[in-house]
Length: 248
Image (cartoon, rainbow, N blue to C red):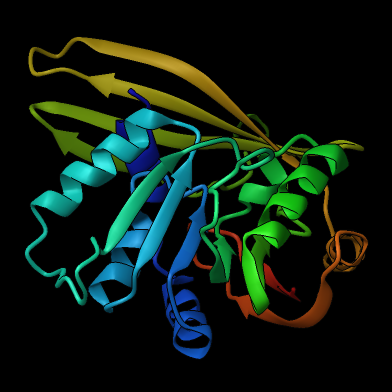
């Protein structure tokens, strides 16, 4: 079920895609896409002609990405290599051997899922080791989220809905709460089958609290130097993000 819910909740987000394409145009490929999931960004970059390595710890998501690539006639192989290769690994501790990248990207606040400073430090060490000299790491974070709770009568984004094989999947955001450690995103996931059978479950995601300056300081400690910032605007359904650029 991880594949369908990933696609329902993340697959329609496109606001950041021009930024990743712009960075690939500036720094070249291959690109390492960390937290690639089912390939929302990786497939878009491949369509634009870039070689991508998609890294995620969930093998089911990467299997879905491979299947998706196999039936996507829009993607043209621009060299003898496959446009997208996949690696099952934890972002906090991965080793890709001698592979090096001029660009490593971390979309959609993935770095805020790594369990705090220690997890981020592990990732930054790995990313630094796999960058070419002068290569850059680009990381999307959310410093602040709009807080709400449906139970309090406050407006919430509409549900994300997808139909597949006769089943309708709906994911309704119900709350965003803040605490000292970060933010907790709550959703209600509902499935309705072909015969009307219905299941409902609650889902929680925790994002670590992180600021642009804080991430830049952590990057410097890991051997990077700050190399700029970009902004991805908010949409009606998704919060905006700040993209921190760190140079190796």
